[in-house]
Image (cartoon, rainbow, N blue to C red; front, side):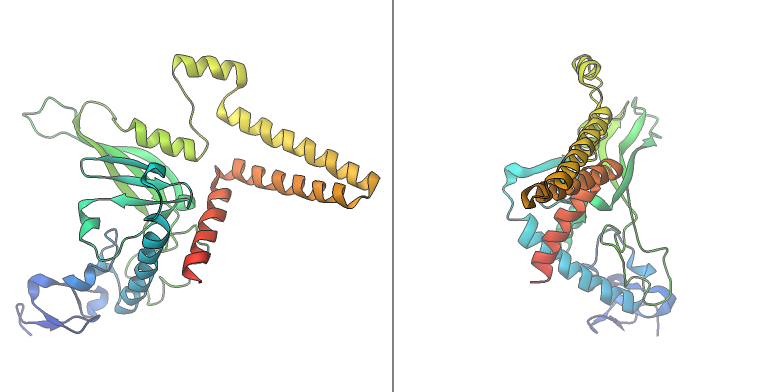
Length: 290
């Protein structure tokens, strides 16, 4: 077959030319542009086998269902949007999921969501300005969001994408790079990073007012520690009371206190991810398993 001959797409079997296809890993064949539109914008289809692409498209179909039935109906007043230079993030706290807004996403056939509990950590990135005509230090700045990812690498054996394990591990994407500003002299991302810090309980107000408040009531971390300690004392007290009175009501109060303590301790240890996991799991179970 010549370079410019038409080849069948391994997904839809339509024959496509050189400019409308991509070769899959291990020379398994080609995928056409139309079928690639069904894939995530954050993967390189050339790193996948035919079986993996088929599995990935099924995953994206589920993501699209989640988007239209869980995310889209939410009142826009309850969507927290951080978009700059046409790219950014939209957060929906009531389902503990977010989506990436980008020009590429608009061209995709399926929309996708990411779970809060899939975020491992995040950090700023900088791209130095190489334009000699510019007086700005950075050509671009933004935030790199590192995700828990169950996929170890690319071009692996067939089936490496399936059986993803815990739902707080993304099956395909390791990181998201979100630009927040271009042609600037400093890291202009405060809104997005502060929001993420608040989600995961690490935000500290460094303003004068915030510093004064912290001096009286402690930092966010200290207040969280005190909350867990207080819940622990309450749980022990209720447990002791239930042992003495042996009443059913006191036993129920003791159980509730222990459950609250467990949840608060888990949230403190995981940066609120335990609660986000519970919320996201309930949403997925309701929509995808109905």
